Amino acid sequence: MKKLLFLVVVVLSCSKSSDTVTPITPTPVANVEVPAVYKKIYGATSVTNDGTYITIKTKGLPDHKSAYYATTNALYEAFSGTTFGGLNFAKNPNSIIEQSATFKIPVKPMSSANHPATPLGAIGVALNGVPFFNQYAGPNNQELKGEMAGFDQFYGHPQQSGSYHYHVEPLHLTTVKSTKSGLMGFLLDGFPIYGPQEETGSAVTNANLDIYHGHTHATVDYPNGIYHYHFTTEAPYLNGNGYYGTPGTVTQ
Image (spheres, rainbow, N blue to C red):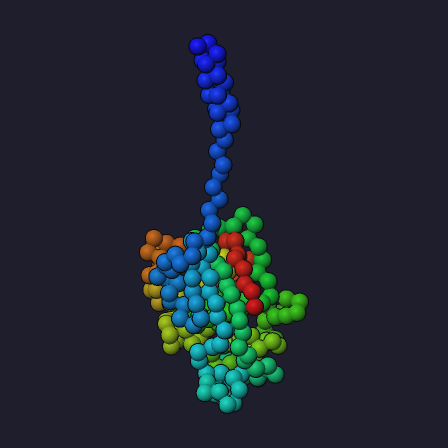
């Protein structure tokens, strides 16, 4: 009887000493419902949600006319007027070429401690699937003013590889598809971008925004409030001293 009791005690002691808790690492889940605000991205080939990231795949083709489409394209339109900033249009030598881009942005964006700088190239995506670029021209963060005359009738242009993009207010979205105060798209950190006006109709200036070119308040899409960027007519036009949040990724 004593031997049996001793065996039971030993078994129980061993059981307790080996009882460890293994942490469970969350894994992305396929086919999570896409929040309604991301369904406004009408120019993507697909928009999916894995619970952590919204993945947006796009061909990067503007849905509006441009002098940079091939003359055989139904969306080609010659242009010889004035563009952003009142500059006379001077077409650059590039043409629009279909791309294959995948943007992954946080579904629940949060402020970053280090606010990483935006690089040259795509830093976000518009509702029509066209990429947003920052306030600089390549290759060495040159002032954007040297490229502005090359912005077409809707304030976009293609770079050498044919990737069409916006640096400044996407005029087709602010005047045709939406309004000057409407949602324009998202930066890679997941925070939304709005046009150059508030919903009251007042113009947004740099004085209304922080150094990252945004601020926090309620919008139609986010009635509880959210940090968001705005386009302005003055530099840096869309983004200032880096992302407000932690950026996701883009592959092209």
